[in-house]
Image (cartoon, rainbow, N blue to C red; front, side, top):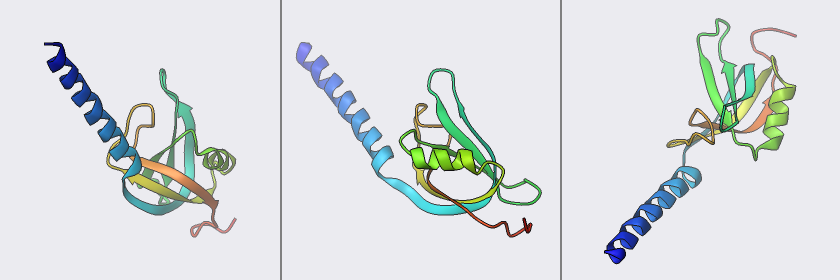
Length: 121
């Protein structure tokens, strides 16, 4: 009985570890998006995550929601600095997420300020 329980628990642990590794190390896609940074905040009750939104159109109808991992300190600083400005972001889309990573499957890795194509500031 102990051997069966050990095998079952070990199997469950290994499957969970494999799923976590797959989600973290295998990106679904990589890309860039540009728009006006309209929201960026740290939120959560138990797990604090960095979440934000970029408006990709003048009307605000196209909103790109994203998350930022805590280890991406340069991206967090840049997003705080460029709040309300036009930016281009590089992101990784993952197959899924965990509650301690963020709300979305899109994770920002780099932020660059851009000139808005809509307005001459």
